[in-house]
Length: 128
Image (tube, rainbow, N blue to C red):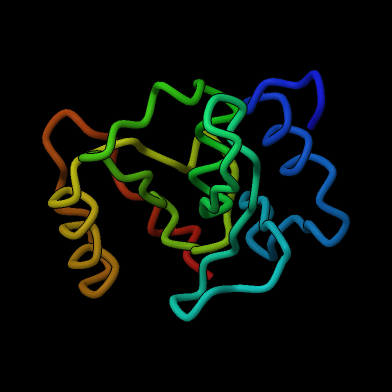
C-alpha cells in the first residue's frame, strides 16, 4: 500500500480480485474471498493516518474506493440493492441509514420493493 491512498488500495483489491466472477444474473460483480459468519467478504487495509490495520466488508470497500474514505459516516451503511451479499458493483449499492437497509429485507422477503423515500429502489430481479 506504500504510496497509495486508501481509495487506490481498495480499488486495486476490488478490481484485481482473482476469483471475482460475473454472477449468473449477468449483472452482479461478485467478490470472492472467505466470507464472515453473515456471508460478507472482508478486506484488510492499513490506515495511513493511524497505522492500524482495519477490516471492512468488500461492498463497503467498493463504496470507499469509488466515493472516498470520508463518504461513509459511522451512522450510515452500504446496502445491497440487489440483495447479493458479495456484490461489489457500485450501482447496486446505496449509502443509507441502518433503518432503510433493514427495511430492504422486507422487500426481498415479499418479492416487491416498497420504496425507500429518496433512496434508490431495490433490484429484486437480480437476487441470486
